[in-house]
Structure formats: structure tokens, C-alpha cells
Amino acid sequence: MAATEWRILLQLVKQIALPRGRMATGLFSLEGYRSMERALRNDAPVREVLISQKFASASTAREQSIMAEVTRKGIPLRVAPDDDFAELNAGRGIGEVFAVMSIPEEPDWTDFIRPRGRSLVMVGWNLGDPGNTGAVIRSALAAGCSGFIAVGTTDPWHPKSVRTSMGSLFAIPILRVDASVDWLRILHDQAFETLATVCRDAEALPDLELTGARTALVLGSEAFGLPDELSDRMKRRVTIPMPEGVDSYSINAAAAVLAYTLMQR
Image (cartoon, rainbow, N blue to C red; front, side):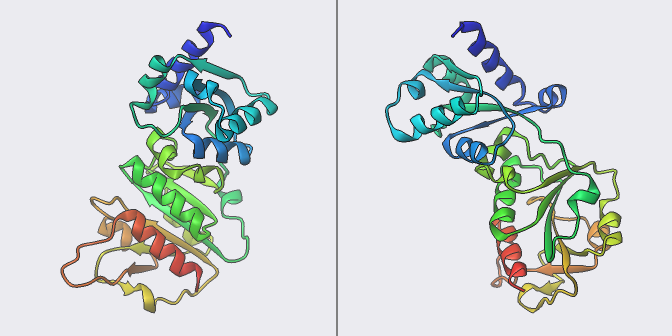
């Protein structure tokens, strides 16, 4: 395999680690065993795979299985020297494998909110930390949400988002929405009961009774939450009761508790 092939791919992975690189190419990357396995299992649009020499030489079943599936699907497989590959994973030690993929074509609003019986959509509004974004997407999938809306600065295709989601973003519909779009009005027009998640002065989660079949659970950033002018436009406000003196849950814990509880109603 020509050295230029892995070098070009390695440089591409570095390029699309940045927002401008993803915007210019329409590509993103994932890393690690579990993310790779889930991408292959869900027929995600993998274009090329980059592995370390250590990975290529491994005789254990997991590495062999991944390489066999990549080959079976006809995906180009590049092998980089271990020292060069180390530039990418920065010592995280989560797996000597990267994949480059096309950012999936996003569904339009009509397809995204098409009725599928009882529906709970999770909305991430300006989630600045991509690690939180990936974790919330993972919780949304695990709780049975029908989709995830990424509003504003929420970036599901950031490498940290992809890594933290553990491949969950390949199994749940994702819609990115510019902050200038009145997404809340669209949800209301489609008969969604919108719930603003807040820390206080709201209905307690154990007492909340949903009034319709379509619900949108909206979370703000962990640092700042939702602004009042946005939460005031929603149909209802919900909070998770906490012991006195406790400020809040982490955003991922809150997302998991809220979504799981609402899906049981």
C-alpha cells in the first residue's frame, strides 16, 4: 500500500477535526473500537479506514473482526506507522482505528417529525461542550427517543461528540438547525408539547403528566441552561427534584433521567 495513501488520509483526519474542515469537505471522523463496530453494523457511510501498524498486526478477535468487515464492505483500509498514528489519538488509548465518513444527509422537517405513534424528540440548544452533545445523544437513543435536534452551536459531528456518543448517532435521526430558524414554532405547529428543562420554578418530573402523543424535551447548555425568553415560549417547564443545597444534575444525567421517565408515561 503506497505511503502517500495513509499520509493523505492522516492529514484529512486532522483537517476534519476542525469545524471549517468539516464544512469544507462534508466529512467527519470517528475513532475507537466501539464506534467503528457500531458504524459498520448500521451501514454508516464509511469512506476510508485508517489503522495503526499495531492494529493491523493484532491477532485478537476484535481487531480481526473489524478488518474483515471493512474488507467485506469494500472500504479502503490504510495502515499508518504507530508513531504517526499516535499524532491522532493523543494517547487516549481507545483504539488504534479511525474512519472518515460523509456527514449524513439530514432529514427535512417533514420526514423528521413524521408521526410514528408516540414520539419523544430531544433538543439540544447551544450545547457548547461537544462531549456533552455526544453523551446526550447516547442517552436519547438509550431512552427510546425518536430523534435529536441539534440547535445552534450544538455539533454532533465534532470528534469529541462522535467519540462520546459511542456510535449512538448512527442509530438515531439527527437534524441540525441554525439558531436563526424558529424551530420552536415548527414544533408547536406540528402539535408537539414542548418541555423546557430548568433547575427550579417548574413542574416536578414525578408529577408531570403529558397531554399528547408528541413531546419535545429541550435542554440548554450545562453552564447557562435555557434563556428565559426561550423557555417562556414553551408549553411547559419541568425540573427534577433535588435535595436541598444541590444545584443541578450534569446535563447528561438530567437528559437520561428526564427522557427515561417521560418514555414510561
